[in-house]
Image (cartoon, rainbow, N blue to C red; front, side, top):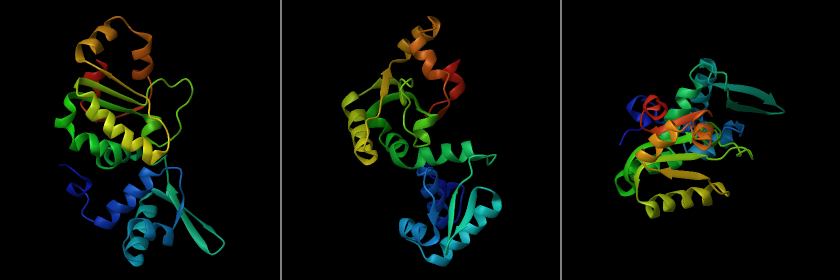
Amino acid sequence: MANLADIITSKVRIKVLELFLSNLNEKYHVRGAVREVGEEINAVRRELDRLEKAGILKKEPRANRVYYWVREDYPFFGDILSLVSKTTGLGAEIIANRNKIGKVGYVMFSGRFARGKNRRKDDEVEILVVGEVVLPELSSLIRKEESKRGKEINYTVMSKDELDFRKKRRDPFLLGILTTSRTMIIGDEEELIG
């Protein structure tokens, strides 16, 4: 299975990136990050400094602590978020269990879901799954993630034929899903929209 270690050689950097990009609303001080990633303090401090100098993280001193958080204006923010979404949490579970779930052509997370933000009332769907899906298997994975997040996840499953039919009819429900920001977990974004 693909993971961040395929392209990033520092295991501490991978853990730090996964921590910050899986919890975008959080700010961590050095010791808090050390507790979360379970690595040596000097290694974590070194990676935090490197990521801050690269512009991925921002830091701010408060009292006797320095807090770090992700800069969403970093030019590759969306790309890194996509990588982390595929290698951690529900994205990693879906990819790892792809054969159990069925013949899945596309899995798309809404941008808000990938960023860990709460769904707006006008957001219909947080996850779109297209293919021949074994619903009990998918539901099981989603229930696990719901218990971790402490909230319900709104998802839609449809066949490839239904997706094509709805696109031809310019179905408002589907257009609402496809016009929001998204992170592709499985499949090609151009093929999904096209």
